[in-house]
Image (tube, rainbow, N blue to C red):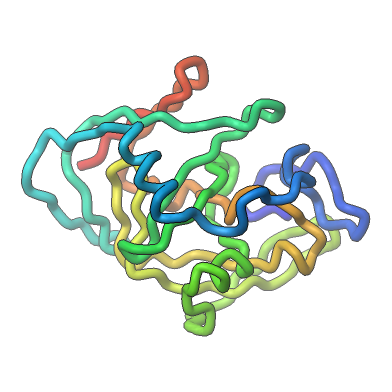
Length: 201
């Protein structure tokens, strides 16, 4: 499935492409991220903002809440594919483990991860058409109150949701974090040190 324009490399038996070789691995600890696990990750990051007052900017239908600051955050990678995994917070409360896909324009969640986490999936605000290995298909769009990661928060962000399991995709992540999250920011990825530097403001 192409949610942002990058060609797929592997395909499931039903024609839906796997995103990478690791997606065939079943999730070991269930969908979503526990509060304890998220807290431990946050402690490891040990990041502190350098400025006190946030500012708000509006782009399209989204309000971006950010600070003019440059910070560096660690991330983890799949040992085989080297794809990037990140942890995000939705609506200031729900935590998810996402794959950061620099080839995806739009952020997309597995609907099963949203349901298990208790996120309301009935608040559909639109439909997007995406290209898949078996042709074009429609995916629902929902609106979040906020999405936060790497010290950056987007208010009122619209995201896509797609049923991974229904289409034979088994993954150890809850969705794809796309480039739409990083609008109004500058970021640099250091694969050698496994860090991402985010400059917002």
